[in-house]
Image 1 (cartoon, helix red, strand yellow):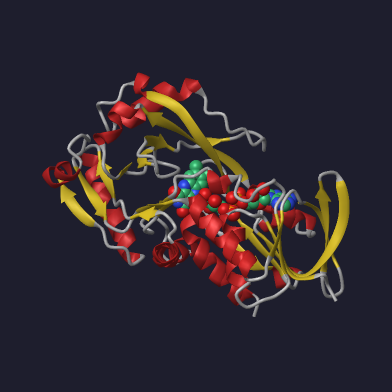
Image 2 (cartoon, protein in one colour):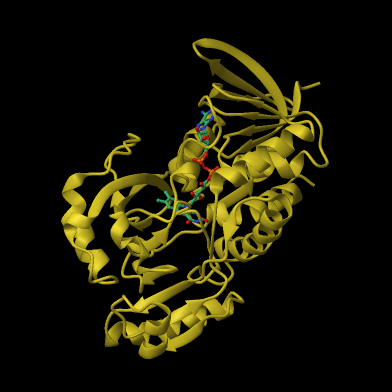
Length: 370
Ligand SMILES: Cc1cc2nc3c(=O)[nH]c(=O)nc-3n(C[C@H](O)[C@H](O)[C@H](O)COP(=O)(O)OP(=O)(O)OC[C@H]3O[C@@H](n4cnc5c(N)ncnc54)[C@H](O)[C@@H]3O)c2cc1C
């Protein structure tokens, strides 16, 4: 008899959402997190946007989970006092060429069931008088959420439903047994082993490493992650009232483009940029030297911002499956039965919109257990 029915590796927003969901029906669930507290990696280093589901390819897990997750998060937030605001968003065209691109964005969103309204220049300026624009798409469904509030809710509810959470507990090895898995753990230098019937790998930036521990050839499976840093700059408080909603540019290459965000303290921030890291060091410093490049990107949206108005702020690292220049890849969420790993579930490449998708991903994991 294994020690636990389900062992979840990783206490980010996704691992916590899964613990919250599965503990409604299952007993003997254990979540392992290597840091002293949950949510200290990507989950606390993002834009905190509840995405509507505009850009993701129709039929992808990203599109489906984002749309379902958004709906579910809004209900969850209002019923459980989790701070969120339906702040809305516009995608603004900075020139005539970009104006024509708005149409395909609108069509893609419509395929995903997301309605966007086209606003001409005058109508856009009525909403946001300080931006540079030729016209825009208005998304009434985009919001912002306190990701800490959400994680706290998932965590507390999971505990109340009987799940256990061990912090400062790093998974360092996995061995497949006859009908269970032996999970080797390191707790501040002390090593031991526990067994679980089902393993859910929600280890974010290390999810490919965990898959490797289970014996999967990560490169052959296409699970190797690229670390892609996104930095933010904050705008001086005297200019933070120049916008009243999220303003995004028309996406150029990778990422959604440096965009304007309003955080919980009413601070105006711009980011995240896209920087492929050469190695897998989790360095979250925001380089001062990026100020001018950021200034240029910011002025495409808000011309009144000078370089001196910008201060380096937070950064986060995306666990991306695609290498630089490759097309966007979908989330990988799979029960690895076909690799002979019955009961082992991998979640790899859970970049944006992972936060928005978290309740929908958790529901999906539940179906994979049947
Ligand atoms: C710059 C940026 C902006 C973003 N903006 C948005 C947004 O606005 N909206 C949105 O929906 N999404 C956004 N995202 C994406 C979102 O943040 C992620 O999809 C989400 O946080 C992923 O959660 P996770 O639980 O999978 O990963 P993580 O938060 O990384 O959690 C994984 C956990 O696993 C733990 N772990 C790793 N290895 C081990 C081990 N060996 N043993 C034990 N524990 C381990 C880690 O310590 C970590 O706590 C953004 C991401 C970035 C980087």
